[in-house]
Image (cartoon, rainbow, N blue to C red; front, side):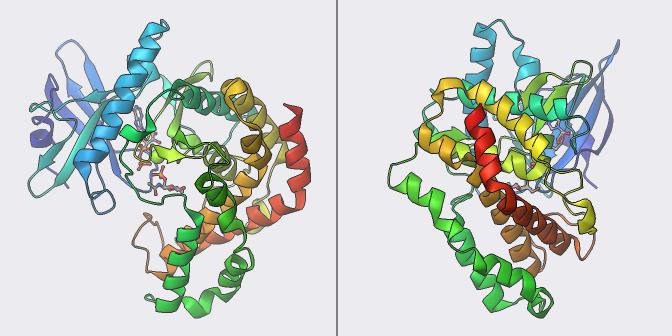
Length: 363
Ligand code: ADP
Ligand code: GN1
Ligand code: MG
């Protein structure tokens, strides 16, 4: 696939190359587990080929990650923590850059491997979901004084649902993959909820909701939990750190974690919104963000969960209509299965929105 032993030589990594194999379930980058032999012991790293079709300015993307990880490492150290374990840590290239370009292969970066920790693909125990909420909540408060204006917008309008809606309409219009007739029901589902698109964007633009440094991709598998205690270790996958709303981060976690099915589960009878898990997450997140959350954010958390699920479904549907050019797929129907699964969750949440809001107010 790639000449890994020569890629590794571009980084400040000791030892002899042993192996490099595909790793994890991310949809965007290509992730590998790299193992080196250091004589007395073996050492693991995470090597990633950066998706430069999507991240067109790798230099600035990696500068974001450098700024945020260095900031977090300092904060963690000053609190007596272990930065190598509690933060994503870059291994620099031999030219001191936080990435390396390899002719004919692309852009690569290396992270220290976070040991004895797991990134869960599904909520196996409610406690894990609660702990992931603590992790993302702590992450938000760790960055609450970080100057957002120093960050580059790595994917412009990432959670701008109005723009996402326009892109969706264009994809329907163009019908590049000739699939439009197969998904009329889903297209109508999106159109019927057009009003959702302007709510949070409007609050942010009018200055009525604070803009914060947010992670923007707060899936359960973007947090590492201790493999023994289940306690939070580190938040990972920092490609989309940008200015955003707390409601996006909260909402995306709920979207992914508050059910017991895989993201592309085709059997919708297995896809059900679990309000008990919603309670767990809400409890953990509000505890971790503490007093820093404002009333307008709190009032919109539950809606944010519906919005992020709707947005993600709309993005999967757009990708299906465009011929699967964005998200990595495992089979031809993967994006439409993912779409239907998101829309089932939206429908479930719409039915219990008042109950969700009540839970938010309890904590
Ligand atoms: P993507 O952007 O494609 O989602 P991620 O950065 O989330 O890629 O990485 C994919 C998976 O690799 C994660 O879900 C996790 O299992 C694993 N992973 C990533 N970084 C580390 C790390 N520093 N230590 C251990 N595992 C990691
Ligand atoms: C992608 O990179 P990954 O797999 O953590 C996507 C998210 C989606 C998610 C859906 C940069 O996340 O926005 O919510 O898939 N990331 C990007 O699973 O587009
Ligand atoms: Mg990821």
